[in-house]
Length: 85
Image (cartoon, rainbow, N blue to C red):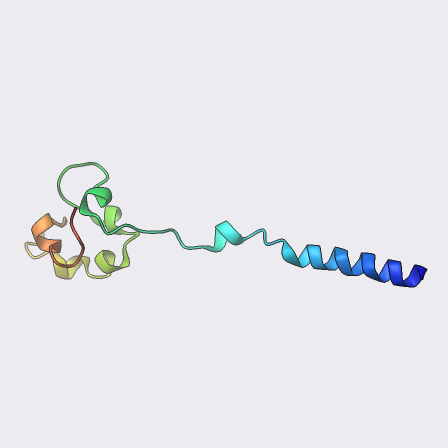
């Protein structure tokens, strides 16, 4: 009987140890937004590469989208790629 109680206690301790996940929030990717206004951190009306870095659609196509090669993306340059609010 004592062995059974020790076994149950050990099993309960092992189960609780596996239930704990300390990396839940650290391993989840940061959410990104598709709103031009939300991405425009300094509110200057254009998006720099650092402002769109967290948005893969924009950062991966930044040079292609920058039609006038001025180093920033205007609303017109990204129209249709992201939903503007």
